Image (cartoon, rainbow over all chains, first blue to last red; front, side, top):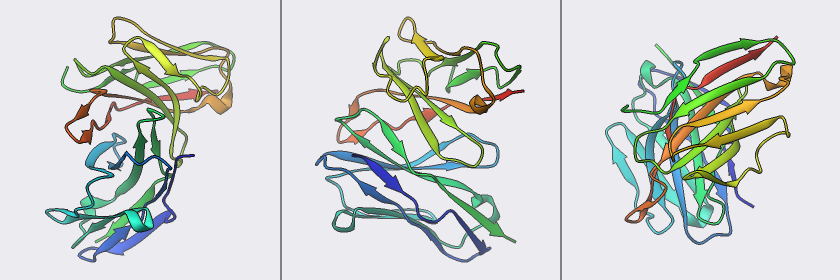
Length: 114
Length: 118
């Protein structure tokens, strides 16, 4: 079965702190894809990044970085020097070719306090 | 249009009435998905279309829910005899439905329809 677990329901940090959002996934497929989405208070889900199972290279984009580790089935997301505008719900998602579904975690609500 | 368009943005209906929710995907996107998001919850998969066919309807909560897609474009999600537990935000998303090299196309979401059943 496919599953995505985001154990952190809500995280609060003070502006400029670094924060890591955890994502653990389960699948028996050898080919799969992982995604992170941001849902700000306005409600629209915004795509942030994708990774495929063959590409364990970590990625950095500005203040955002992602750490993909197949050995621990994790795809964690770090925001460096957080800002108030980072406040949102962040979702991790898994896609496997066998199901054609994008399976989403329950999300982590991040609150960045000024 | 440039993005996924959903209408109406808000719908208030009385228990027992039928509702239709519309989704206009990004032009050229062959795959279309419906999800439901209840207050403070994650995304619950409802149904997936590839072209006009729906290979996976497993997420539809009951036989009161149905969906169709015509012309490989617009999709309608219909809820018959609405119940209060149907209150949620219904999200539509589309994707190219094919791999882009070694990367699966991401989903592009609309703003959703907030359904309130009174």
